[in-house]
Length: 136
Image (cartoon, rainbow, N blue to C red; front, top):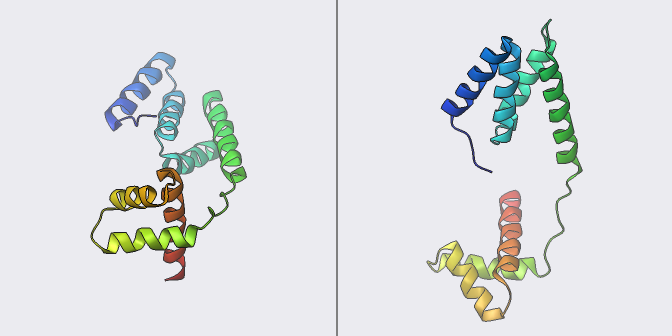
């Protein structure tokens, strides 16, 4: 999904606000565009403060319900299990990177050596590097 620019968000909010003559409706659209652009963490506090105000528009209530549904689905997502042989694959990719290759070159070279798909190698290497960050 493409990210909207600040100018596009402001323009859409202005159009809705002028059409409805309610500032909160334009503000709700602005916050929805923020969420859809990937700025969920930025939009959530603004939604909370808008809900705490005295006058809450129906659009803002709908947006709050939408945000709550998204939070619920994000909490349900479970991190996948470690790929098989992630330690061996991760070390091999790490050694190739230390030898001067880029990450993509290391993944492709190891995949060619072992006859494994690059997606599996990339997932295992990602798991390995995440584990290294935690342990170091």
